[in-house]
Length: 148
Ligand SMILES: [Fe+2]
Ligand SMILES: [Fe+2]
Image (tube, rainbow, N blue to C red; front, side):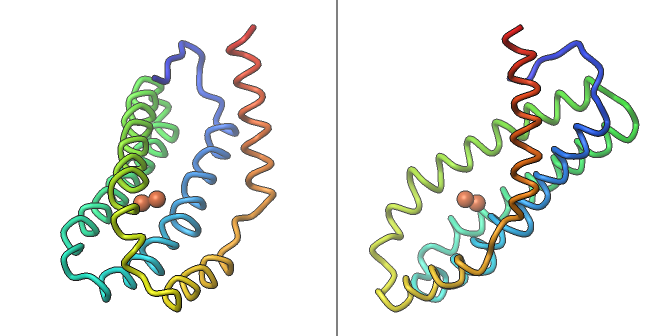
């Protein structure tokens, strides 16, 4: 749970938002929405319902990120915390569903050829290392604060 009584530093929030958006829309979600899910759908119609549900959750994540952005712009710290907590539990729950339930079921469905194709497409998608470095610095700053 995210908790703090300190004011939000706008520059730090901007880094966080940039990371959330880039990671989601230009990297992780694109891997699933643009590469993996279409292949899975073509292979197993039976998985359409669960995959649609995961797409719905991606959109929920996007809305929560917009909520965070709005809270920063309007300087509403308590709303920022509320959106941050909702987003954290949304993402945790989503990962549990994908990694714990769905992906193990789907693993055997793809042929070697499909699997290689998906992996090759994934390789093309690289997240900006500068952005990761920025996030690491932010993480260190706030972890240090939490310890002190
Ligand atoms: Fe996902
Ligand atoms: Fe995922």
